[in-house]
Amino acid sequence: SQTIHQWPATLVQPVGSPLSLECTVEGTSNPNLYWYRQAAGRGLQLLFYSVGIGQISSEVPQNLSASRPQDRQFILSSKKLLLSDSGFYLCAWSGRTGAPDSPLHFGNGTRLTVT
Amino acid sequence: GNSVTQMEGPVTLSEEAFLTINCTYTATGYPSLFWYVQYPGEGLQLLLKATKADDKGSNKGFEATYRKETTSFHLEKGSVQVSDSAVYFCALSDKGSGNTPLVFGKGTRLSVIA
Image (cartoon, rainbow over all chains, first blue to last red; front, side, top):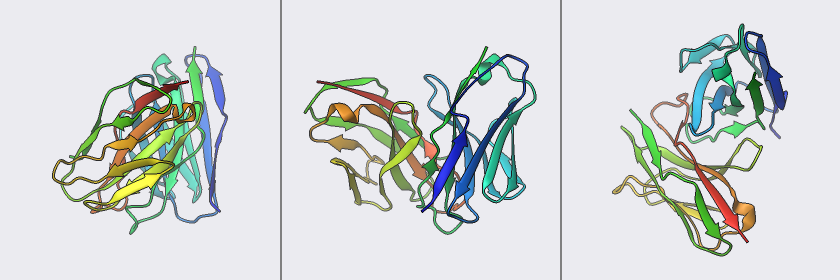
């Protein structure tokens, strides 16, 4: 069966420090991968999605970047964190093209607090 | 473009009360529609889905019917439990774009009190 792992579960970082959140998927090949952020009172915001290795689409210009070095690995990064980067970050995967009804499968999220 | 509008919360109900969370959508084609649930401290889980008009998705006592004429996909449950307390998200996918991410509503927080 397919599983998605996201870590760390919680993170407290000072302003200006770097960030690296990692997400890996097991039990499937060629998944679409996504990073979402959930900020208080703002719902679910899509940050990045990827349809293949090295292919990243950015939905919102900001202080963050994403990379997909391997088929089932998706990394969210920042060189210098801002206070506004605080939030709950969710990684997700879905089946590839041809199955638009394929649901998203989410990790358990990372609670990031920038101080 | 595609969009989803949900009723704003929070919604507070007593146990065994009837639940309705409204969701309407705007789409250029004929999207698939989803409800996701997020329990405290966790990621989102698929609750139910419907892929074409008049389809009814159901799971764990929750139901939603795809209404093309009113562009709606309201979530209902006849008798809620304390364990149903969570945030509920309505979402759509554009069938014409297999790789396009889901579009989510802003979420509705439900609190059920004993």
